Amino acid sequence: MRIRRILAAVVATAALAGLGLTGAATATAATAQGAPSYVTPSECKQGGGTPAINEAGNYCKGGTHDGEQVD
Image 1 (cartoon, rainbow, N blue to C red):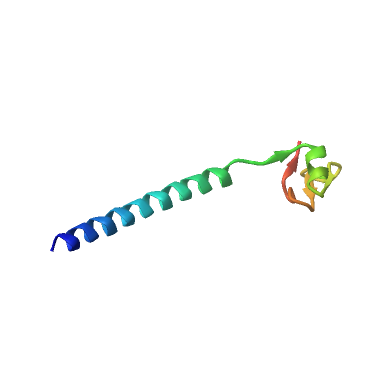
Image 2 (cartoon, rainbow, N blue to C red; image 1 turned 180 degrees about the vertical axis):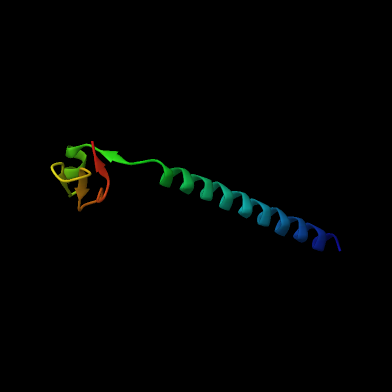
């Protein structure tokens, strides 16, 4: 009987901890997506891309910073 209570408490604690972690991850992802991303031309090149500063929008083409705005 006592083991069942302990097991139920452990399962409930794990479930609540999982919900807390999921909420924190969602909040972090929402914050990261909302902020615009800027890279320098040298960061764009180091990431394997080409800074397209003469085109509309000034974006990095290719590499790890693909689609990020060059500032």
